[in-house]
Image (cartoon, rainbow, N blue to C red; front, side, top):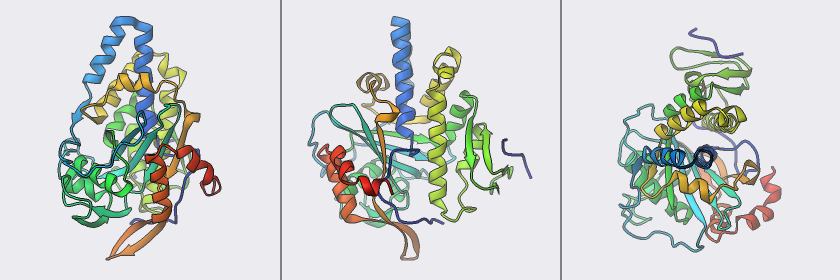
Length: 352
């Protein structure tokens, strides 16, 4: 049953996550890359040229050139850290490379170990209270504290990368920015998705759809409307983040289905919609990623929430406070490419 037609941040304490329906930005990019690789292998030179053209169609930005110094050192060759950011700007022309209205609603550090056999996706709450430098070229202690998504509004992706690197001490190798508005077309290209609605609500946005408790089949406009809701839920932005995660999981499952990968038109529509919805750094290659990480599967992905103490009010703002000691240990594990060991040591809390 689908939704009918017209008719503050909050949350509890967080900690390491568990395998399960966590954010899937990385998997969306991954399945697109694998699909490109499959096309290339099946279709020979023509398909490979298609894949290269698709890669060339990706919007590009350079988030690293403004970071003039003080970046974390790369400690393990072959390991890769990708900053995945999702925006609900609702403005397709909002710039991602400078100050503006573009804000991040989903922030994920995706760590791929040197053996390329697994991946760890660390979700950072958008309201996490962190130091934000004055600009991308400034030192980490030059600015003031604010919600981490404010970095995107103050200085676009360059300042976002700087802020994440300052907070985590993890060197970011690539960036992928995705606007939720663009995923309307991605959803429609897949024929819609099934999403679970935990309580009946009326949207606060026109045309004021009613979302009925239960599994709803949603098209792109409906799904985008659903993942924007937060005020009707006790945990506010945490509910919206959870719905975004469920939405992305549903997209991934539909994109990876036989019905999509075996249907040339549907696959082409999906790939075209994905490339139109993302912006990547200058060195990012969809085809190279597909080749390098072709062995990655859903069971090889581990999803973790940046350790935090939950919501607090600071200077009149409702923010999420980091669990400094636990977060430091986890990010050091990423830097040293020892996340597998960290996960085993934190298995009990990861399952809470």
